[in-house]
Length: 114
Image (cartoon, rainbow, N blue to C red):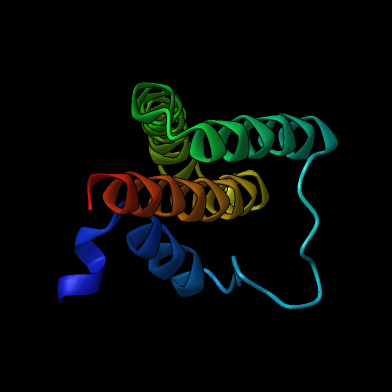
């Protein structure tokens, strides 16, 4: 199944097997520190895009990807730990957020290349 190759989709599936909805509409909260960091990142991305600064966008993208890799490792450990479902659900939500940011930056870089 192709979607299970993506670590976030795979984690969502594993959580669903345990009755945990990682993308529930009723609980969309993310930690304040995480959101604050992402707001600052989005502002830096907007500034780099406005300036046409591809190297800055690439550096920001590398940072987002590094954070994703760290969260994926943490998520794997949480999924292996019996009963850490709530913490795993939170990491999935953060990874979804970062994945969207990475896709947005990647698209901006594509626009600069054209």
